Image 1 (cartoon, helix red, strand yellow):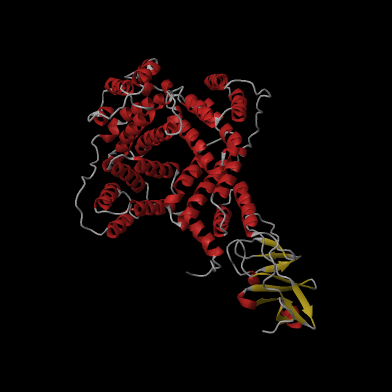
Image 2 (tube, rainbow, N blue to C red):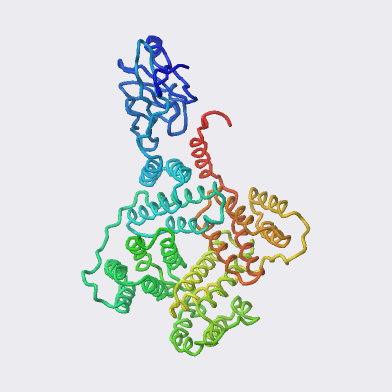
Length: 580
C-alpha cells in the first residue's frame, strides 16, 4: 500500500467512512478501528485493553466509545478510559488528504512501557483488580524490569494502605520473592502476581496507616532503645513502640534492629500461632530484596502484629494439663548461664535427639534442649534440628485427622523455619526462646502423627525421573492423593532426579492453583529447609512434607490462573474473545 510520507498509510475513503461510521483496517498488521463521529475521524487499537474484544463492534455515542463485552468506556479522541479496570486504549494519529483517510500505525510512544505498567500496577493495587495486577506484572517483566521493582512497589503499597500493618498478603509476597530463583521465567511472573494480588486483597477496604514520628533525639543508646521497644510491646502500646522503632532505624545498625525485633517477638510464647514471628522474619527478608532504605516503613508495619498478638501462655493448651509456659519460663531463667557454659564447645546432635523432641515427655524435651545449649549448641544449630522435627510432623501427618489440623502442624513448621532463618541472621541468646517455643509445639502436635503416616523408605527405583514427575503432576489433579504425592517425591529423589526440576514442578503446580496463605508458606519453608538440610534424609523429609501438604489442598477452582492466562494472552496479542 502506498504511503504519502514515512509514517501515514491510506486506509479508507472519507466518503465511505462517513457512510458506514466505522471501518476495521489492518495497516502493517495492526488491527485498527477507524470511526467517523461528530464530523471527526478517530482511530483506536481494535483490541479492547480490558480483554481484547473488537472495539469496531462497539458503540460510539456522545464522544464515548463503549465496548460491548464488559461495557468499558473510552473517551474517543484520546483513548482514556472512564473505568480504571479497563486501561486506556491506544489511539493513532489520523489525517484526511484529498478525500482519503490516512493513519499512522506505528506512532512514537508517549509513555515508556515500563512506566505505563508501573502506573497500572498502582491502579490494580488501589482498586484490588486482579486482571490489572496480572497484566501489569507480566508487562513489567516482559519489559525487562527487575522483579525487585514491582516487589518494592507492592511493599510500599501494603505498608501504607493497611492500618493494621503487615499481614498475610505481604508475607506471601515476601515468600514468593524468596522462591523466584527456583522457578522458570513464566512462573516468576505468576509468583509475583500471586504475592501482589494478595497484597491488594489484604488492603481492600482497609484504612490507611498514619505514621508515628521518630524521636528528635539521636543520643539514645541501642540497648536503651531495645529496652524501651520491648517494654512498649509488653504493655501493648503500639504508638510508643512505633516511635522507638523508627528512632532505632535512624540511629542503630541493622543487626541491632533485627535483634530488637526478634527479642520482642519471643518475649511471649508463640505469638498468634507463630504468625507474628514469621511476619517479622519475612519483613526483614523483604528488605534483602528491596533494600534497607525501605526499613522505616516496612518495619514500622510490624508493630501492631507484636502489640496486639495473642500470647500462647494465656491459652489453656499451654497451661493444662502440663504448664508448658511455666516450664519454659523456668528454663529461660538459666539461658544466659547455659549459653556461657557451652561457649567455645562444639555440639553434635545426639542420635536420640529427634526421637526425644517428638516424644510425649515435655520435661525430657526441655531438658534435652538445655543440655544441648550447655554443650555448645548455637541457636542456629538447635533451630535447624527442631525445624526438622517440625517438618517431620507434616511429612507424617495422619490423614484420618480433621482437615483443619493440617494448619496446626503447618504453623509449627513455618514458625520453626522462621526461627531457623532468624538464627542465621543474628546471634542472639533470645532466639533460643523461639527454639523452645517451636519444640513445645512439636510436642503439642504429637497426636496429629497418631498413627503416623509412613515416610517412604529410600529405594532403588529404576524409573525415569521425568516419568515420576509426570505421575506427581497427575496426583495434584485428583483430590486426596496425599500419600501418593509423598511417595512420588521420595521416588524422584531416590532415582537421581534433579532437585531443581522438582522445585520447578512443585512451584508451577502451586502457582496454578488458588493456593491459600498456608500452602504458599509451606512451599517456601520447605524449599528453605531442603536447601539447608545437612543430610539426604532431612532434605527428603522437607520435600515430602511440602508435596503432601500441597496434595491435601489441591485441586482448586484455579480462578487466579484463569486471570493470569487471560492477561498473558492479551499481552501476546491474542484474541481472548475467540475460542482457543
